[in-house]
Figure 1 (cartoon, rainbow, N blue to C red):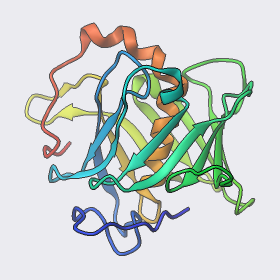
Figure 2: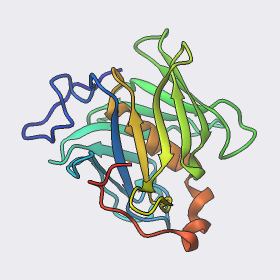
Figure 3: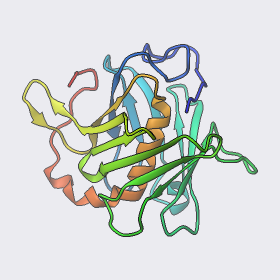
Figure 4: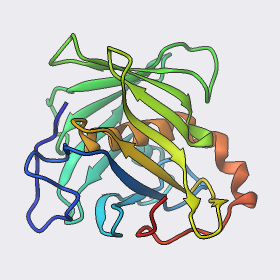
Length: 219
């Protein structure tokens, strides 16, 4: 899956093929609030340059049913939208800004309706039935791996560690590792869905949150 929607004057993290890279990249993801799932995100590369952003305008249910991933200039790259009704908490993804009548390019759903934060998610590609992904792990603990159909890891979500103190930081800041050849915007779309499905599980952990680190700091 590739979202080839490159913007001008982008960070060095972006190459000629949209957000697909020849080397493994490490992004730092900041969640702007822990009070409500989907309250917004900013994503930085290892040099501290803004790569993605997700804006939110409050805890209204309508805001949380559709989220837009943008580049630093506000250009829409990807829209994820909750499909209702759905026992498996299915979300659908659209290239760019979703308009009425647009067809989704992928869907994300729970593999089972039993269980919560540790339940696996299945990603189905509508344009390519042979392309499928599985997301395993626990997003509320910031520990997830995305596998392709051959069980190879294509992206990982991990807790962020301050390299100067070896302190594990709070869950409002975490790392997104994207493997070569996989679209980083697509991976960030998974993060948005995971936050919506499992986000409420970590709200009560805010009291133990550690101070954040500047995004330019490497792991």
